Image (cartoon, rainbow over all chains, first blue to last red; front, side, top):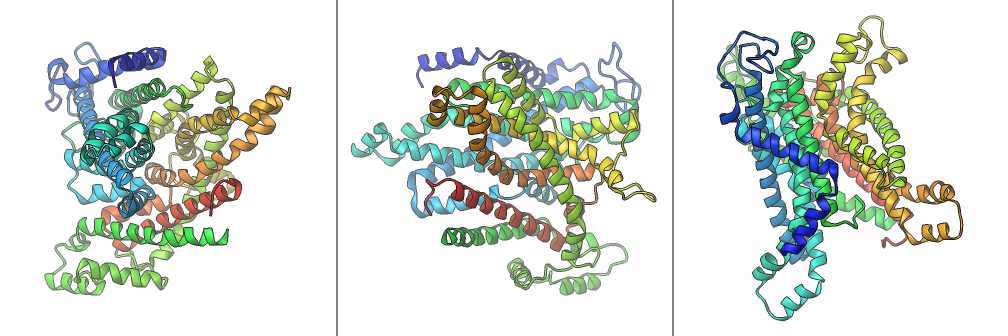
Length: 282
Length: 314
C-alpha cells in the first residue's frame, strides 16, 4: 500500500467521530497499562493501606480485602489482560494466515483437508473447547494465551483463503505466473501484502474477543491466577455477596474498564473496515 | 434435492468423527480421572482395580475405539462420579438448557430484527449510528459482568427477582415462578445475541435495498413504505433465518457461563462439574451432543438456502 492510499484511509477513518474518540481512549488506556510500573502509585501485590477502605485521596479507588491499592492493581491487571489479548491475536492470526494462504493457493486435497479441519474447529462450541483445555493445562498466563490463540484462527483462515482465491484471478498475479515467477515470491510478495488490510480489521475483533474470553475464564477461576492481577480475576474476587453489595469499588471499575477497552477496540476496527473498504455495508 | 441432502449428511459424518477424536485427545491430555479418585482411603491396588473396571489401563486409542463402539450401539457410558448413565444425565438436564437457549434466541432476535431494519432504513443518520453503537456496546459487555450487575440491582437492591435456580424451593414450579427465575439469565444471553445480530441484519437489509429490483420498484413509484415492508423485508428474511444456525455454538457457550452464575440446573452446570472432575463419559457425551446439534443446524441452513436460492447447484 503506497503513502497516498494510507493517507486516504486516515482521512476516511477520521470522519468517524466515535471511532476517533475510541482511538484516543484506547491510546490512553494502553499507555497507562504499559507504563503501569511508572504511573501506578503503589505496588499491586503488597498491602499499602487499611483493609477494604473506600476510595479516598491516598487510594483513589480504595483498597482490597488485604489492603492493596485498587488503582495500582487495576493498572497492572489491564496490562496483563491486554498482553493476553494481544499475544492470543498474534498467534491466531499467524496460524490463520499461513493455513489460509496454503489452502487458497495450492487448492486440491490440501485445501480440502485444511478446510474440513477448520470447519471442525468452528462447529465446536468454542467455550467448551476453551474450558476443557483450561482444565488440562496448569492455569496460568501462558496457557491461557496459547489456548485462546489456538481457538480463534478459523475465521482468519477462511478470510485469507477467500482473498487468495479472488487474488489468484487478478491480472497482476496471473502475469506473475505467466512470467514464471517463483511460487514463494508470488505468495509472500504479491498475495500476502494484499490481504494485510482485511486481516488487520479482522484481528481487531479477535483482540476484543480474546480480552472478553480471558476475563470470562479468569472469572471462572480457570485463567490468570492470583496474585497476578487480571481484569477477570479481580471480578472473580467479587462474587461474594458482601463485596457485591457493600464494596462496589472492588468490582465496578474492573468491569467498566473491560467494557471500555472492548468497545473502543470494536469501534476502531469498524471504522478501519469502513475506511479500507467503503463499499462494504457492514 | 434428496441427493444433495444425502451428500451433505455424508460429508458431515467424517467431520463429526474428527470432532470426537479431537475431544478425546484433548480430554486424555487433561489427566486421568484416577488422580481425582485417589485419596487416603484408596490403596494402589484399589486404583489399579478401578482402572481396569473403567478401562483406563488401556492405551488412549483403544479407549477411544471402545467408546466409539459403545456409542454406535447407542450407549454413551456411565458417569465416573454418579455411576448413572450419561444419556440419563443429559436427558434430565437438557430441558432447562433448551428452555434458556430458546427463550434467549427468541428475545434476542425480537430485539435485533427491528433494530437492524430500523438502522438500515435510516442509514448514515444519527439514529443509525446510535443503534450501531448500541449494538457494539451490547456485544462488548462481558456476560458475567452484566449478570453481576443485574443481581446487584434486581436481587440485592430491589429484591424483585430471585438470584438463581429455576424454581423457588418448597412452593415453586409454576409457570410464573419459572418465568421469574428466567428473567435475568435470559436477559444476559439475549443482550449478546442482539448485540452480534443487529449489525448483521442491518447489512443484510442494506444489501437488499441496493438490489436492482428494489430500485426498479422504487422508480416505478411504489411508495417507500411498500418497497421496504413488502419487498425488502421478505427478501431479507433468508439471511436472518440463517443467522439462527450460526448462533447455536455461541449460545451454548454463553449458557455454560450463565448457568454457572445463576445456578440454572442445565447442561452447562453438569458440563462444568464434569470438566473439573474429569468425568470422561459425561464430557464426551456433552461434546458429542453439541457437535451433532451444530452440524444439524448447519445442514438445515444449507438445505433452506438450497431450497430458496435457485442459483445454488446440487
